[in-house]
Length: 183
Image 1 (cartoon, one colour):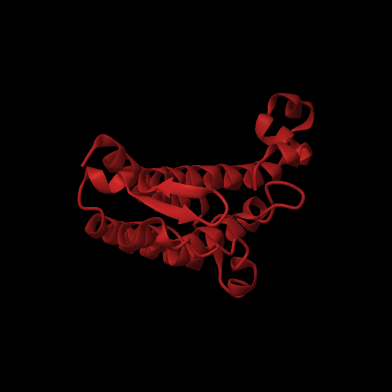
Image 2: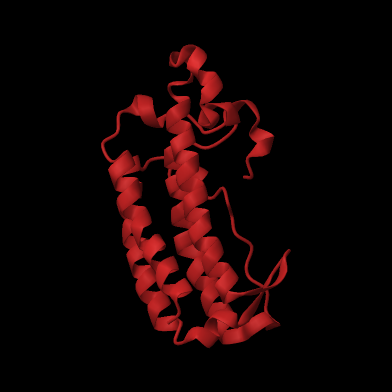
């Protein structure tokens, strides 16, 4: 496999460890603030990542490899976790995510046989034709985007405490301009 695939899988493999190190047993004061006033708390983000593992990345990979652009992807429910995970703890969600990610990376390795597979196409319902390479790049950047969202929520828990230094802390300034942050 080419370097792109190997490096992408490596990044995807790291995300559960990052979440564990950052969030397991974290005090509620660090994990109860959303990234923006109407945004998500870390628990919401981890739940969203679980939804992706359950219904998005591997399902779309299989669709690209089995049907190409003949059938569009199913729409992704970005907010499913808000009802589904009400009674779950953040620590439980992190472990569930880690299990799902490990299984999905195993499945990905079974599905993608060679470099040519990365250029195969599928049909996104609103973006049009996309390649498997683009899907996998999006999966890894999606992880990075949501990890940064978790950091922003944690930083936001100390927004009022940093005093005048806030002017130098971009992670807090984004809370004042949520339009600058893609959802």
